Length: 203
Image 1 (tube, rainbow, N blue to C red):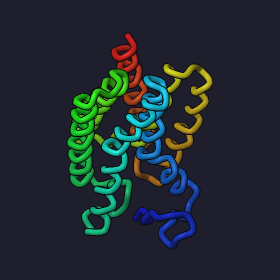
Image 2 (tube, rainbow, N blue to C red):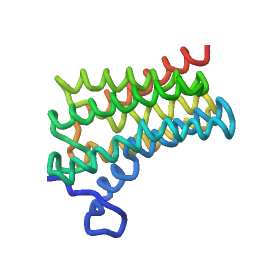
Image 3 (cartoon, helix red, strand yellow):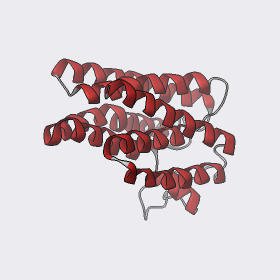
């Protein structure tokens, strides 16, 4: 049974190295860095503000929803391993990202950021559809997508971030939340989606 996760130093802080890697490299952290990075590239300091607003809908609200589900006993931990609750969480994320996308578009956020959010929305929908039949790694999809889009925007030095993707993949397989194939599948899908997103929004 996976250990419940909490803050470092707390009784709920994951005990194994693999569980700690999973915790530290969870999708929320990747998404916050990525949307702010895309926003900064699109519009400097103002873009960072837009990115933080996007992060609220793409990362913060879903995390609050997951935490609420844990407190209510609806799922075991932040990874939400079982298929049915996983689909509930993905449905909430789709609704949250869609709300954020509409709000940013109405308020006049940079086109690159709204375009990226649109592709994020499509990617989450694809992950939800795949989850109906196969437990693809969402952690690795988000991580690989984040590294790919930031490398395309900021240059090849960011490609070193794939080392963290590999580390995350190892952790997901080690804690037995995913098979190696599910980890690889998530990574490939995330990277491909980010490449398509960049080709569309930067063209």
